[in-house]
Image (cartoon, rainbow, N blue to C red; front, side, top):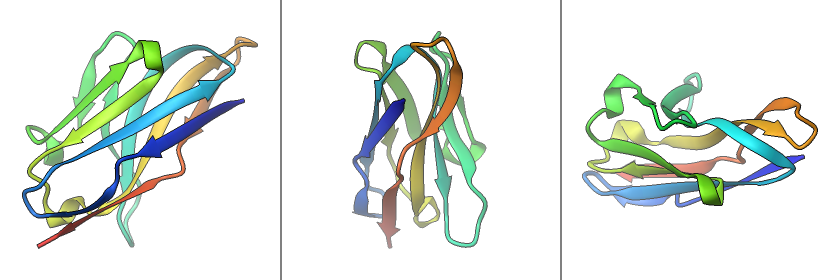
Length: 120
């Protein structure tokens, strides 16, 4: 079993910054991709940013140049640095990881979600 714990959400003014963290623990053999998704009220969940085990990153167009995803493999942790936040960034942010567990079974796991609210 793999658990994800997220932290770092909150309320911030337009133009401000927040840093999200997500740590994976449990029966992990290796972690492949790690990423952040978000879901705003009335909208579908969307990929915000992703990072592979090799460090290749991808971003949705609306956050390019403002958000940075990174990972610390030694800590099984992925980060999302969010700068120049806009009201349209308001959403619940979810961590997602693709893991091979100690039984060498691949799995897709989600964090509990953390609220990010950007006020104007």
